[in-house]
Length: 231
Image 1: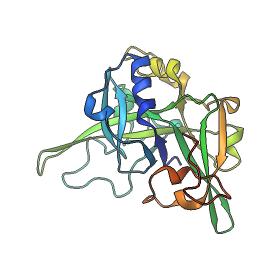
Image 2: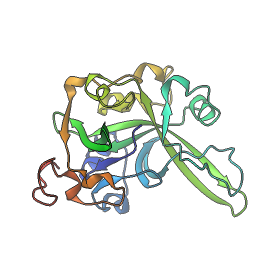
Image 3: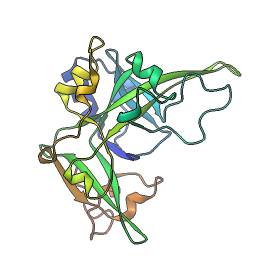
Image 4: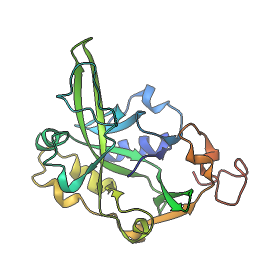
């Protein structure tokens, strides 16, 4: 499960330029985020625009006043065209790309959960392949646009600590993924190559979803706040 990630706003701005997607000043002025968790509003690219969506898809058919008890933050690629929560969005081509600087996964060692940060090895940002949906709560006419990160079988780097990994896109594959005329998006659903990623063992400070700031990137074995040169 992919449940936490980081985003330097400069990376989002650069990606929007490369993809030819305008990003408004208010969004571009937002702070860097070091520990983005489910139910957060996340920067998202779709249909030639940059917008924000709630992370945790709410299907359009959800009942008034009743969003899912467990946020649908991930969508398994193998069943995305079958599960009621995702199949309509998939068939309608409601694809999105969620920019990130890096993402976290946790390795279980006994009772301990040891965090790892995964990034592109050339220092460039990535994007999650995602699906989005729009739900209107008829009880108060509130509309929420939300998204889910698509997952697949892991590469060898991620596979040693988890049985899933997010589908990752670079600028080239994201442009294809976001093309409304794409006939077969499944060809882009695959594990990102191990040789294009790097991993960093982190201090457990980031384990709490309430932790924020550069200290989340503290390498394991160092005191949080001692250095922040990973961004």
